[in-house]
Length: 520
Image 1 (tube, rainbow, N blue to C red):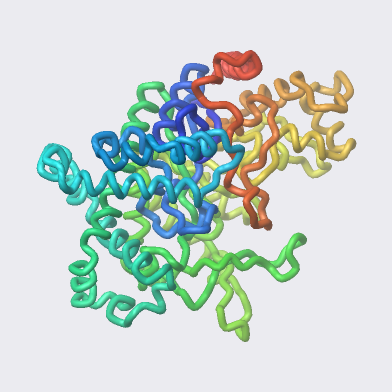
Image 2 (cartoon, rainbow, N blue to C red):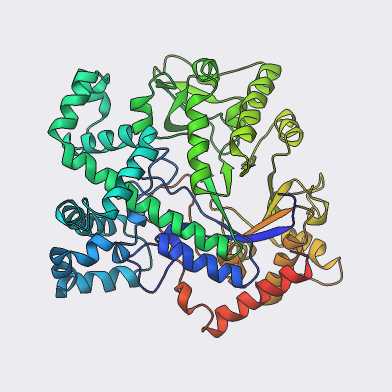
């Protein structure tokens, strides 16, 4: 990063605004970026924003590595919706107004309700676009055509796949008719002809999403804030990418994690494995395209599960075969990871990758990252000495990212409340220099000390959960669990009301003051 910067982590779906439809959207992102920028933040970190399948809430199992989630479109600012009589009639109905009020006030994201309403309105907007002189035949039509031309390298496959998913009732693409399943050109052409309107609708949604995200990025830039995104290690087997790039993925195996103290059997993630020899043979073409797309979306991006690029735990679906690392030899693992990360650095410029290197990571992986100046993570609660004492954040290397927590952990308040007393004493000893005893309850003073030490870290970059800035609870995800408590967290206050609330204004002022005191 070559500068001391700090920011907040808040998923896009968590970014509440006074006018959202039950989830944060691209307009919410602009509001939160301006708010963060006014109080000294230089980074706003979000989770993956690619489209998720129905009944799926985890952004790490998307059905595309390239297309954006349409639920993040701010429908109320779409020109075709505003001009369409049919949408005005729906939006002005008592039923819809009540639904919008309920969604806006909801404590958690209800993806099914949000998507149902947004798709209903956007379909009417699309029909208006198709038939109005100001739409397809006007300047907007020219803009749409330019988007299709510019993005065709990923858009064509995605839109056809997405339409086919609807047509075939979301059955697995492996069960489609042979011609479509195997991408026979005649079968693809026939499907396009039969379903052209549906395909174009999904292209239209991507145009809206892309336009709104570009506007949000301009707002970030004007506020002096970098947008920090996330590239999941893998996409779902039921994704446009696995269907359209069969040479890259092995659907007869799934990836996971080896047995450890938390899982005697190991973990099985239900995601296909990479065909590494084929990927390397074509010079990582699919991954290069993926990073090129990430550069269109983000200023900085996080490489999820970086150790998987060195070695991947693979479980054949034929359970008669034992799970194993796809490369056993350490020297070969280091060579593969080095080749991959070198490619990432090349493609990311002028953007910047950050590697998620948490957990059990062999030394050679971090040596490779250090050689390539790729920052890894330093999460305060896990940075310990041999005796269990907490390392002083000032000792973290400059090429690293210091963090209060991650989207998979509890907040500082929750951590403090569940921490054993002896651990709390060690933490307070580091924070206070042994000058006092740890307070029993989590207090504003404890929060300030924790945040200040994180911002004072030797790391060039520091990011804290938005909840930690204000001493809030509220988990984003609890690993190893499934349910509506994951990936649905909404910040309790809209961005527009943060500075008018005494409690939240005080948190923002403290945040800003600590950044100044620590040179960020």
